[in-house]
Length: 277
Image 1: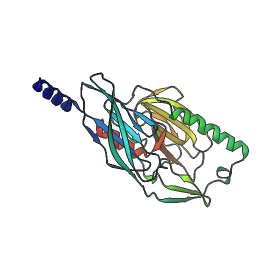
Image 2: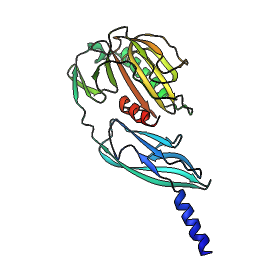
Image 3: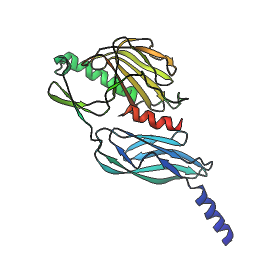
């Protein structure tokens, strides 16, 4: 009987899962990736941080950190089942640190900063529509290979820079800007489905692509589209041409990404994902 109990304890301890976290510290606006050891006796469910839940897919989970998060220690609670038993929990600790982002002073058209009632209503409506998209999760993944850049060009503004428009602090830069003269072809950075292709007040000509499992990439300030809503696209496929539409200081491509509705540094996200693809 004692041998049976010891054997059972040993088997249970051997089947307890291991994991690898991309970093023990993460800057605000960045993403953490946690990979769990494959174990046929364990079914991973989700990771809970405060009231937010992040679904675990294929033994890994992406945890996006909002730009507005302050420095703090985080307890990520992993929910899983073992031998089809009741739910179990394990805590993974990491720390959020200040990204120390730079400031940018920009001059744009006055009507893009001081909005009329009509433009304010339009901008609010477009934001609500976009957030409904970003907060929707397609369970399937369209990603089958590594991500690529939407174009090969110089980066003119990085993610996270505080933006001062016409002398007034007005938020932060939610993406990465690439130099692109009007008419430069823009490609999809991976397989996905177009969920928006239209002109918007701030973002101008906009394309949003759903890559599945809560991962979205966005392409703003475009002059024309080669795709339409609900169209499937392949990595490297031309989705349109760069432009100078929306709130801009000159022609360029604004490239951004969201995970589970939260805006994150798109290049850091791509780097994380490409390491495991």
